[in-house]
Image 1 (cartoon, rainbow, N blue to C red):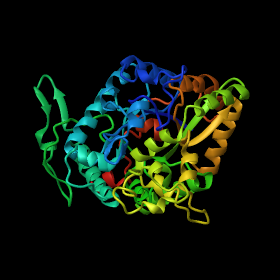
Image 2: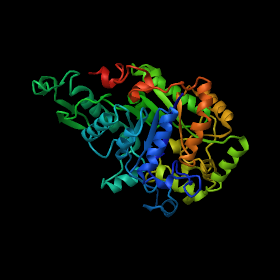
Image 3: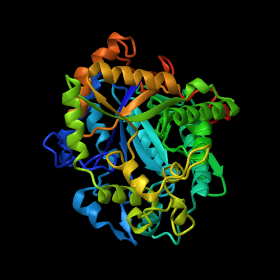
Length: 456
């Protein structure tokens, strides 16, 4: 069982409201020491990675910053997570770091150099969470784009973007190009450093990649989107997928689809690590855990839910007929072209009725973009984690803290020993590069059957 922690450099996680509670320290997100403490806790507990979400967007209503979001700290404000990673790597021994970076705002050369630098400075413990963006209508306006690129075309652009970046990482420097011979005064063999050219519909580049090969060369490629197009993108590109948690049956179907898609691309389907989000509230006794969860639930409201949902999808739920479904807004503006997974999940199908807007608000209250929710004592939590894992063919979980970092500390102290005793976690945590921690010793490089390697 791989374990990660989902975080954002903002007041709280998941678009829910928690920072005012006395158990939460997430308002300290502007303090480096806050992140150092969290990283040390999960490094020592044997977690595989810290996942840092990011976006330039923010919740809006009628094109303006949501007053609720600004007042209550719902997905606003945020800081750049890539800047903090090198400091956290220095303070930890083995923990991996997954940084979210979009494919539509800068050139692949810029991303390739940034992640090569991070891979060097973390000793090969870096991953790239590839996103096509969130709140795309907001981001398009913020960056001065004439119009928002539609959902499926953003993924087509992302395919080229990833290909261009991987070409730079994998094909610019031969394995023995770096010499560093002090006596001869020879740093590198120029005959083994090659021009890399890429000519696509959306991306063009030609030249020499100036960053020397890092421990992994290519960062571990994560992806977090389970729309139909998102799953197709993951099957081709992703080494690890953050799967949307709905029901056990739907999650299992998404995992199976991603693995089948990977196999169709000639990849080992078991080489794709599948992770789902989980909100765990644990305490020494069941009743204490329930009481803590109830304290969190009392902080939530329709306004909080609506602010989060408008950020993720561009849809203002409070402006809709509460008795109608989301069909009433599809095709208008950004609706359905951003955060597509969180729209289609409520539209019904496969024998499931579409939910009304009122039901969507109720469904997301206290959940936001979070995954499965588990509340209980350490044994109850471990039992449920195992049940989810066995029912879905998932490979692990990302904790989405309610009260950070207290929830993570509780999990490390109370649940990790139970999972370790059951053989779900190793007695001695894995070490090495992030890719080795996911796939085993000697696997630092992109797999030979990955399109980024197999086409070289």
